[in-house]
Amino acid sequence: MKQSLKFFGGLWMVLCLGATALYAQSGLALERLLANAGLRNAVMGIAIRDCADGKEVFNYQGQLALHPASVAKLLPSAWALEKRGADFCFKTRVFYSGGIREHAIEGDVVIVPSGDPTPDSRYFPDSCFIRKFVSVLREKGIHTIKGRIIVQGESEEEIPGSWPWEDISNYYGALCHRFNYRDNTYCLNFTTGAAGTTARLLSVEPALPEIRFRNQVKAAASGGDNAWIYGGPYSNVLYVKGTLPAHQASFQVKGAMHQPEKYFIAELTTYLKKEGIKIEQRIPRNTTLEELWVYTSPLLEEIVFHTNKSSVNLFAEALGQLMAPFQYERALKRWLSGQGIDTSGILLKDACGLSPQNAIPAETIAHLLYTQRNNTAWVRSLPVAGTDRGLNVYLRHHPVLKNKLSAKTGSFSGVRCLAGYLTTSSGKRLAFAFFINNYTCPAAVVYEAVGAFLSDWVSY
Image (cartoon, rainbow, N blue to C red; front, top):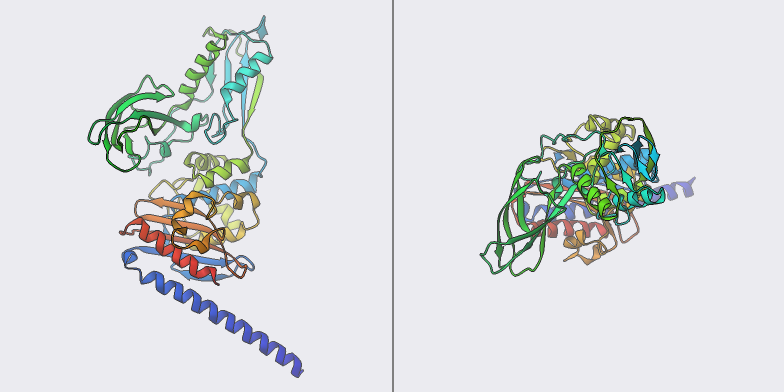
């Protein structure tokens, strides 16, 4: 009996000492963070869970609903992987009408889209819809399409009402359509001379003949891409303003292509003609459809990989629409509630994090990270400090974080967020979310403060 009491007494002392050390460690880390003068006007929410047992080991205002920026992408990517599976693929079906006679499709080619965001995406160089389609026609010996090429369900996509007007014509504001092409992005190719001179617009790729660009871009002595595209998503006149580095032979500025199916058909038609396949544009008599080919996307786990690693808004929106074409927030909350996660603080207007009206508590994301800790494909999609450039800003003065931090970043005007996993020097794995909103100091001050805070936790 005495031996048992000694054992349990010793165990209790170890646990108490461990808890005391933990509170001392977390208190010191928080004290240093709050002492940073650059963050005096900011609002912060921090939550940390131990991945071994799920217990919350630290919480500072983690219940506050704050803007998550691109950390919001963690939600649709985890949801899609869990419900659809890592090997899910989008399928875009291609049909023809009128039958095939004497090497000719007698009617139309009809493409039935699936919301796949990957056709001809720069993130998937092998997913070239146009080249694969031409190969199918050659395999079937088709030299002529007597009808038209039609993308079924072409329509002007509704713009999320909360997206900032200045974002929707730039590449990261590309809308997710039922048919997506080239990341729904075009490139403006500029050349620049001396500082203060007007940059020259050389070309637009792909060609957008119906749009006129009013070029007001100047060359600047220093800085990177500070040029922005302004105008409505379906406007015929767009304004390009800002600055680009001086003395550049070629510099690209990317914009959002809001009618991807239209420019896809134009490029496909040009490519077919170049390959010797005629399109006669007749209206067919027989409209009965037969399947010609099915275009299959890369695996869902590969799409999720780029969604989070490269923070692709279009991919996140596609995943959101895949899981809930309507009432995304309500459906997502239902799934999260099923995981035992509190959803009372969630306000979401999109799936990618672009809307300034989005708000999520840090403790909600930390809890999600705990529940998804064994979701291998999802965890693999998170950037790793020392490997992926996006986290280098936290490593600059804190090399101890190298290979110990894997996390999704999020940035917005006055917003910096980080959420993921931290491995301590003792081998513990922590799930954390760190949101900072409304800071007024330089971003470098925020990165230094967050890096220092996480470095303190590495010794936990």
